[in-house]
Image (cartoon, rainbow, N blue to C red; front, side, top):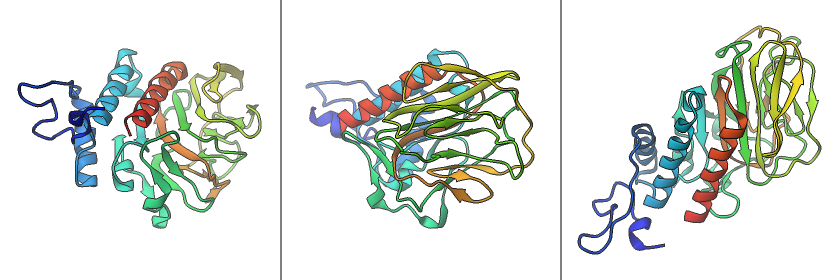
Length: 273
């Protein structure tokens, strides 16, 4: 990798050295806005190579109509120089590192398994209530670079039955108490659920084929928020020790297209750093 690619994306020579070379820079306005906010949290801009990967990710999402706009709470937990930068949201409200449980040493910005690694105790409150998205118009997804074991790495259960709007490493729910099993000790990859109609929902297990599961939806009963690295069951439960490099919550979307964009992003960041 050349020197220019290792410069902060907002450096005066980030586009290359005069008379010697040139290289692409981020162009998407939403990507630049996100990268600028990350730079403020980090104290310095990420490398051009990382910034270009983020720019490509946002443009990939926008290439599928409705995909980028479906993300209502989303963090890239990789690439940023610091944990504070990693917790800057791409869109939506900033998540809360509950009781400052995660520390800098839990975060790996690049390499083979980038992401934030759980310790079985710490978790993040996404700030996104389970009732914020429609009963029949929602998704939840995460990308793990290690697998998350037999835990529930993201989701919420409202105070009374049914299980609502949840995802686990091995079992999937979507506004229903009916579940679709995915398997034990899940490997790395993208996991997600998406519901766009009342009678069934889609699931993705470890970047695999999308499956449709018939289960009528039921309404959420309170505004409890989704947790990440744990499952909000009137408090954090089933906390994971896996590494998560991305999560998103929002309205319904194509899990296949999301997986493609996220996998390309995390691979590019790993190769860049």
